[in-house]
Image (cartoon, one colour):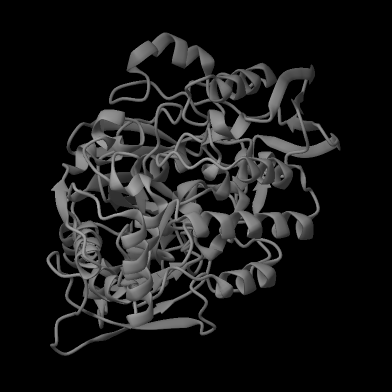
Amino acid sequence: MKNTHHPLGLAAATVSIAALALTGCSSGGADDGAAAAIEAPFAAETPAASGPLDRATWMLGGEPTTLDADIDATTADDTILANVCDRLMRVQPDLSLGQGIASAAEWADDTHLVFTIRQDAVFHDGSPVSTADVLWSLQRHAAEGAAESDEYANVVAMEQTAADEITITTSQPDAILLQAMAGDGGIVWNPRVIEAEGDAFGGPGAASACSGPYEVTAWEAGSSLTITKFADYWDPEVDALTDEVVFRWAEESAIANSLTTGEAQGAYLENAGAATSFAGSTDVSVFQGPSTNAWVLEATDRGALGDERIRKALSLALDREGIATAAFGGLAKPWKTPVGSGAWGYEAEAFEAAYDALEGAPAKPGEDDLAAAEALVAEAGAPEETIVVASNGSSSHNVIANALVAAAKSIGLEAEILVVPQVQYGDFYSDAELRGQADLWPDEYYISKNDPLGFYKNGKSDASVNFTGFADPEYDELVAAGYAATDDAERAEITIELQQRWVDHAVWIPVVATPATLIMANDVTGVPSSAAYIYTPWAASLGSAER
């Protein structure tokens, strides 16, 4: 990725933060006790490993839901799938694009993307990965209702055009499609396994349908999931150093405790603030790296938040600085947009300048911001019903939810919190009945592409996550024009206009941006410290550290 900027806009190589108490009952303000400094090196990778490991234990923030990415893919799911399933293309640690099952990819003309499929890969059942298998996989991803089908919106045909070649035909130039093939929309499946497993595929006990450097060898529901090195992996540059990785899951405090006691070797944290407990530790280190992640409040069309004036008012009144401190221990930055600057993979200076000029999402609301918010509420008319913000009960979600309640109160609105069990929380994206119970919910959102256009497509009138019902024909036309703009400068200009329109209409309310945050025992090293762990086989580089 051609990105020399720190995702949070910091020029220093390390981020000095304070260990601050997290709270679930306040929108800001940290414990007044002594603050302990922590140095979090910022880089795409951790130091290379010096030797192999027989076994490692890695912590997740929650149990995987399914290993069928065409149904769903939580962060926990993708953290595992990244090591188990090859994709056509591969995200590199610096979030740039590399080769996967496709040994080459080239646009033959404006509407024909040609992939050369390597012929030496094998699935975990020992059968070869054929070009026909790759085509079947792409067709499954593109099928109506599949979780990744939106990545194929401009695709009109896919066919095998040679023994080792697949040609995708699009209705227009598509500057994002190739990058999408490094995400879940590019996973290569074994169709014979999926057809044999039927509805059981993706769950505990189901056979592997992938060809990655690791395969799932055990999944004890509610307890652990184990991946084991696949001896016949095709890529010599991805020679897994660790024979077996056992994944366990727990709440943030228990994750930290498992590393403190030596029961686990590492974890990628959803809440960067949980890393503050390792300030001064001689056994565990904290790393941060590039990401596209941003915490947002996603609005529904249930009631008051269907009116963009109410969304804009709440955005003006929200104390992002307090959230960054209370929920993330300072390891986050108040943010104005719904996607982190790790997505600025080209024309970074233009994106940074446009970001700096944005208004409507102050770090800490001042008198003028609150006055403007109150005027918007008066214009819209204060809603009769109480605004409902959901939380899954975690510290980060609670702080954001409480901050929203406080913001509403500060401008004359009433709001309350609905606690939704964590196991159900992800259903906000797929369950209209659940969305009907809340006006908005906080969540961390990311994209697999280092191009902000890959996010702003979510504002299209027919986008699957456009839950507010935002509709702007000109916005839709700009998305199409952005996809067609293969020139970086032209695409950046269009994307910046989309960004401005998204912010002007407060489609979602941005909260904070968080770099990828890794905690890892000092006797292991080698994994990426960037958000690449969601899509690249990160565990293959995990090994022992020099002592």
